[in-house]
Amino acid sequence: MRERASRGRFRGHFLLIVHSRAVPNSAMPAVYRKVAIMGYRSVGKSSLTIQFVENQFVDSYDPTIENSAYKPTPYANAPACATHPNIGTASMLRADNIFDQAFTKNLKFEGKDVSLKIIDTAGQDEFSIFPPGYTMDIHGYVLVYSVTSKQSFEIVKKIYHKLLDQTGMPQLPVVLVGNKNDLRNERVVSHEEGRELARYMKGVFLEASAKQNDCVLDIFTQLISRINALSGQRNNQGGDSRSGCVVC
Image 1 (cartoon, one colour):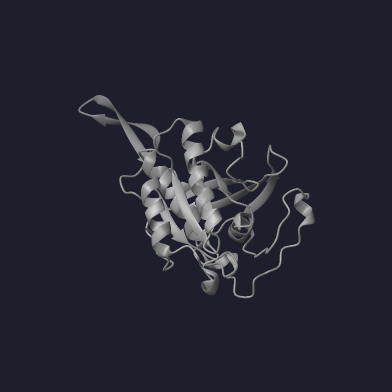
Image 2: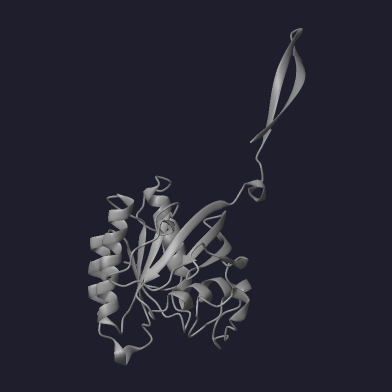
């Protein structure tokens, strides 16, 4: 709110009159959020991230290759960025860990500009030692497993407990994602199992498909909502999904 003062007269006395006007939203600085996407190898972490950031499907992606080296393959049914109000500008940055990639995405969320930095981590397993960058200055986590891999489902539980141990926090902003839900005939992890695990984590649960661009946007908007909720900016436990995705 900006104020402008002017003088007026009232019965021989000068009055100080304050005129206020609202500052346009465009003048407000963007809200910065930094998140990490983690999970077992080959569960589709990079595919989900690139689908969200670039609106393109990449089936396989080697994070050890320079950013400019990968050639994403557009998915035929992917909507254009301009068709969704939450889609903004995107770019890729080198992360601190050579095996990780950092992406940035600027988007609108609940009427506010958000600058979202995503650390796309290398695959983890039960023996992984997390570098400090996985827990320092991270606002929230996307934990991914494949609905076609029971092992990846078990690994994501271990990742969650390691994050709790390293952060020392009793609760973390988490979105649990069962990826590859388009592979119906290969499913070995039920929707109910995923929902129960998310309930244990006190997080949000979504099933998604990076290939079909199904519920990908919701993953990150739900995480932003969860971060806001746990930071005291919102009273509810998560935002509404307007894409038809089932959010648990």
